[in-house]
Length: 217
Image (cartoon, rainbow, N blue to C red; front, side, top):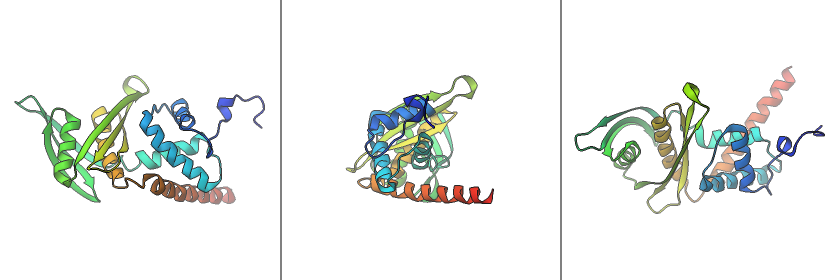
């Protein structure tokens, strides 16, 4: 069935595939240019997922796993936010966020939106949240473009964790990424195991749904 198709068209990822393969597929097919450290983190999740399932993953399955791990929970984490310039020259922020299952209003100021939001999150949770690295890029062009932000945070002395935010507004995408990274950091030290187990369950549920749909036809 694959005769005549290029290598790029039929590439799959299995437990022996490197992080470059996963990152290549996400950028080629979905325009997601993952930072190097995030490539390492997500590839470890995918490797464990393929080892546990014993199957190869097509690009669509890898993207669904990426959405489930990084994007789905981030979408509604920041309900609203507002920025204000202060006489001192720094930035003030107020936001309504969901942290530890509780919706709350947070506020702080800093030298920019991300710094102010991180300070507000730190004040609200008591956790030593710090942004370690930040990357962003656009998907698409013009009025239809969507921003994607990748944020790596450290909380106290725990291992760092990534969050990803996606929104037409770059600031909104960035704040979502910060909060998502904080929430994922709560699993620090067991991110790979916890994530692969959760994604395996999701994949099983999706397969069951697909099988039921085929039987109904």
